[in-house]
Length: 289
Image (cartoon, rainbow, N blue to C red):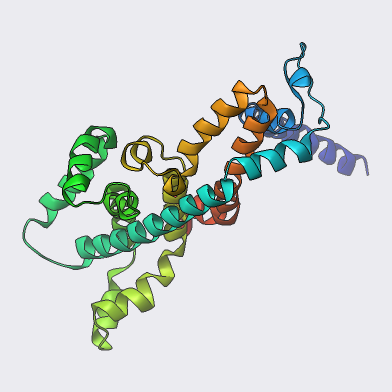
C-alpha cells in the first residue's frame, strides 16, 4: 500500500508541472479573447442605453432601457432591410462566382498541361501583392465605358476572380493522390465528372473557408460601392451606415447609431458561426488530409 501511494504521489508530482503550462495558455487565450471581443460587447451594451447613460463617466456597463426603442428606430429609419438585402445579394453572387472560378483555375493548374502554366500561376500569385485600391481608377473608367455605373453588375463583375482562392485550391488539389485521377480516367470519367464526383466532395472544407472569407470581405466593402453607386436604394450597408451614423449623432441618438452597427454585423457573424469549422479545417491542410 505504501509503495502504491508513493507511486501515485510521484505520478501527481510529475504530471502537475505539465498541467501548469496548459492552464497558463488557457488563461492567456481567455484574456486575449475577452480583449478582442470587448469592443463588440461594449457596442451592444451602449446600443441599449440613452445619451446620458452613454456619456456617463465612469462608463455604465449595464444593459439600458432603450434596447427595443433604439433597435426599432435603427431598423425602420435606416432602411436597413433594403440595404442589407442589397449587400447579401452582392455578397452571395461574388462568393459563388469567386468559388467557381477559383475551383476551375485550381483544377486547371494541377491536372492540365498547357504552355506557360508555371508562368501564369506565378503571375496569379503576384497579383496578391497588388492592392485593390490602386485598380479603382481603371475599374471606374472600365465600368463607365460599359455603362455599368450605378448598376448591380458593377458591384459583382470586378470581383469574380480570386488569386487567394486559386492558390488555396491549387494547394489542396496538389495534396490529393494522383492515383485518384488515374483511376477515374481508367473508369472513363472525364475532367468534368472527376471534378464533380471526386474533387468537389473532397474540397468542402476549402470551399467553406474561402466562402466565409469572401462573404465577409464583400460585406465590409466601402470604397468601391461609395464610388460606383449613386442611388441610395442600390447602396450597400457599410456605405449607408456612415449616413445613418451621421444623422443619429446630429440628433444625439448615439444608441441608434450603435444599434444600426450591431444589426449590420449580424449576417457576417451568422456566416462565421455556420462555417467556422470548415474555415479551421480548410486552412489546417494536414488535418484535412
